[in-house]
Length: 397
Image 1 (cartoon, one colour):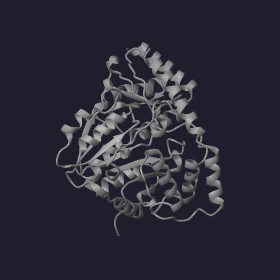
Image 2 (image 1 turned 120 degrees about the vertical axis):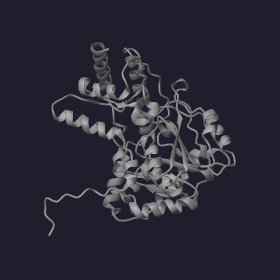
Image 3 (image 1 turned 180 degrees about the vertical axis):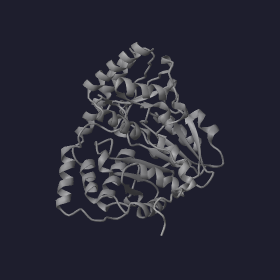
Image 4 (image 1 turned 90 degrees about the vertical axis):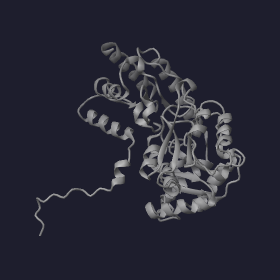
């Protein structure tokens, strides 16, 4: 019998040391702990719409539950939803998509993770935006790839400079990640630049993971997918979903669109990990894509209005300088004028001003000198946050 006091070191696999995190959830937990202590916190850290899921989508889910859609479904997704997604992507990206090129997954992240697992060998290089969604770099490192950041620069409104892409491509480049509109900056890659990315790739056997989860939340102009460029459909993995567009973050439903031979392997990874996505949420997804789209337009317009108010307010605060985002629901101010580094300033604003934001460094090395605020909160709370930040800077700068 082993003595109960005997302690064994946890035999953690070495690869776990390469796994990063999403800081938004860590800051959210800290903010909630402060709230439990009685402190007033304005939450501008978490990236999810503060709107309710549209009523027609909720009703579709309730009907599905009552109708018995509570059992296992195919690992790739219900045929009904896969057909709906194929029709939607065919229409919006101007390409012909079939259901066998669609894989439905619980959220957007599985498409990132499964793509890396399926494609990236030890030492393969992946080019990704930086500052960018932190899970890109985390997954690249976890699977043994080499992360090759391409810097998004403020002077370009955080749009990728395609001229900086070509020097990053090597014989080991396997995948390029695009994200537009972009988290955390709200930057958008214009059509001419996306077409130049395709031209830069040329005939190389390089795939593109195009993260278009915010595509319906672009403030001006029409979003353009690299999948729509002639010759690029077979080399594109399109990531999209329902969380941001339809305020369905808790429903955990997203999808990837890719060549059919890759979809087979992504489906095997689904089988080995999640089995399938919840059936009733998939039925709700059909209603989301086919039903009334006016809530999406109203939400996008409101995020634009809030962004305009918040950016204007930040630009009046000492040490802050902010450009207007072109999509999503984030603003990414330059804070170098405060004399503070990003992480200490984010911590101070949370602890002392009661405003929860994220350090730009949560999104990569090129995020130093910036903070990310989510405007997925009421205009009243955003204005109160601006007042708190202004008061803090007057007392501390």
